[in-house]
Image 1: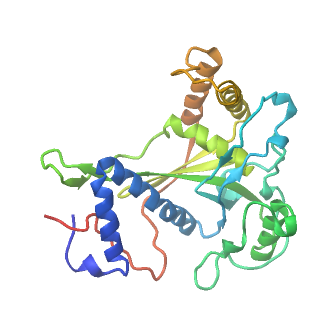
Image 2: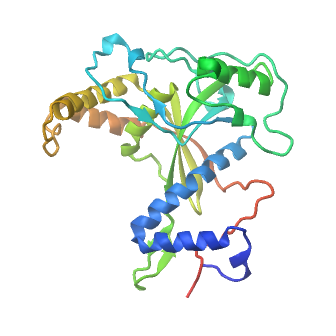
Image 3: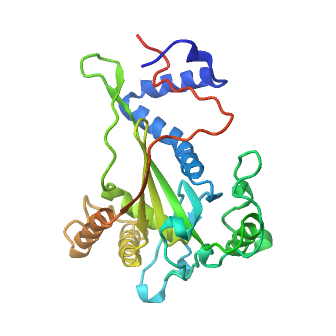
Length: 313
């Protein structure tokens, strides 16, 4: 832990102290939740600052277009389904590791299938800020298609001759704070080693985000306070998505529309559910370590308080 004059070195020091104390009152679980939420934007910023050629798309809740699902999937009734990735980012395919774009089975085209043909602006504005704030998801201008609007924005902002890939980004943050085993009420910094493979339970979320956002791949950025950011690339798997939607549909029809109380572990005995779980593990094991960012990048001109604790005994 650190202390000293840094206590008042940032304009938000008082607010940070109050927020930290409230989180601590909720115990270790509350600290982990507060840490995870607070670090999402910073991890996204680190990813972009590490790749100044990238561009972020403004994103909120992305809804699955059920009418665009392939008829041969034979999915039954579904509730409204949405997903909210922590970000959507464009990379030149030469750096993202993606293949040439194509229309996916969902019928939603990856925006990056069309190369940028005009422009001339640099990857950032003169003050170091990202020019991505004009790009939004959802309906395009005057009811137009978002693909056209995003591609027009890229045309206006970027040099020609590059082929771009559009990727969802999901951030997972490992809290570095643990209870001190020999000091009740005290916490210590104890950061775990980075994952060699991502936890399998993140795979359904990533796949649903890819479906909802219309991308063919995604990045899982796993950040730690002292060990940087490890980024995994995960490919979209439509066979997996189809199996996932089939289970969601059955749950919805049987227990929601049917008004029936679902039993505990209602699908655990079924072969299709066991195959889905196995496929989830397989997706995690085949995830590729895309890169390791060893240190967290800082925004130019910003003041940072690097103390792990707001007070020390």
